Image 1: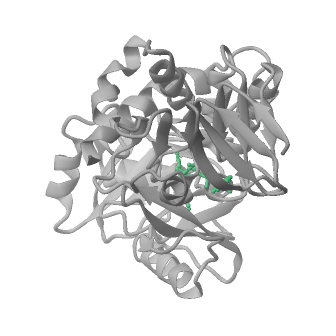
Image 2: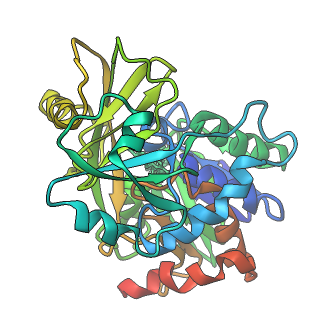
Length: 368
Ligand SMILES: Cc1cc2nc3c(=O)[nH]c(=O)nc-3n(C[C@H](O)[C@H](O)[C@H](O)COP(=O)(O)OP(=O)(O)OC[C@H]3O[C@@H](n4cnc5c(N)ncnc54)[C@H](O)[C@@H]3O)c2cc1C
C-alpha cells in the first residue's frame, strides 16, 4: 500500500480547506485532499462574492471583521490583483418594515439610515414602494478566485501538498493516527484530520466513525441579467429588508440577482431551478424599476449550516485528532482569512487575540 505520512490531512480544498491548509503548513507538513479535479468547484466557486460586516452569526461576524485587514492589504506576493473593492450596500424597506429596519441597525457596525432620496441618488431605479433605507459604506466586493488561489499558492509555497481527484473514501484511526484512503488507493496518514468538506462534512465524519453534527445544506440560486438602459457600474449591493432577494453589479454592466433562497437539499452538484430564478427577478422588480428581457446565466450552490447556524471549529470532544471546520453558511469567503488563523491557533494551542472571542462560540463540544 502507498502510504504518505504528514502531520495534518485537510479534507476538502474549497476556501475553508485552502485557508486552513495554508496557515497550518507554516509549521507542519500538510496534505490537502480534494475529491474534484478542480479546487473550488462547489460552494466556493458559486458565491455572491460579498463582504458584509454585520452578516451572519455573532461568531461569523467576529471572523468577518478580523478578515478585513487581510482582504484590504494582503501580504506581499499573496495575489497579483486586489482581493476586494469597496462597493457599499443598501437595505431597502417597504411600508410596515421601517421598524424592523431600525431594529436591525441596533449594534450594527458602520450602518446608517439614509433617506429614500439619498438611496435613489445611488440607485435611480428604486420604486416608490420603498419607504426607508440603510447604507453600509464599508461593504465590499470580493475576488473569490484570487483569495482562494492565494491560499492554495501559500500552502504549496510552504511545502504543502494538494491532491486533486482524491476523494476520501475510507478514514480509520490506526495506532494514534488517521489513515485516509483516497480515490486510486493512495493512503494519507497523520495524527490530525481537518474536516473541511463543506456540505459533505457529516459524511466525512461518519466515514471516520465520528458522530454527525446534523449539518443542513441549503441551495441558493443566483443569475446574471442585463439591466440596460440603467448603468449599474457604481451601484451598491442592494438587499431586501426581509432578505427576500438581493442584487449587485457584476462584470461592470450586468446585475447579479438572487432570490436569497434556502432550500434544504442533499449534498451534491446542485443546479439552479428556473422557478427560483423567476421568483428572485420578480421580487427585485417590485422594488426596482428594471426591465429584465433575458437571463444570461444562472447557477446554484450550497450554503451549509450547523443546527444553531453558528460555525463549528475545533477538535471533536470524543474522537482524538478529528478537527471540525464546517458550517460556513453564507459567510465562508468573507471569514476565510481569519478562519485559517483560527484553525492554526486552535491546533497549535495559541489563538490570536482578535479571535479569542470566537473560540467558545465555535466549539464543536456544544453539540455533544
Ligand atoms: C449563491 C451563494 C452565494 C454566497 N455568497 C457568499 C458571499 O457573498 N460571501 C461569503 O462569504 N460567502 C458566500 N457564500 C457562502 C460560501 O460560498 C461558502 O460558505 C464557502 O464557499 C464554503 O466553503 P467550503 O470550503 O466549506 O465549501 P466547498 O467550497 O464546497 O468545499 C468543500 C470541498 O470539499 C470537497 N469534499 C467533499 N467531500 C470530500 C471527500 N470525501 N474527500 C475529499 N474532498 C471532499 C468538495 O469536493 C469541495 O470541494 C455563498 C454561497 C452561495 C451558494
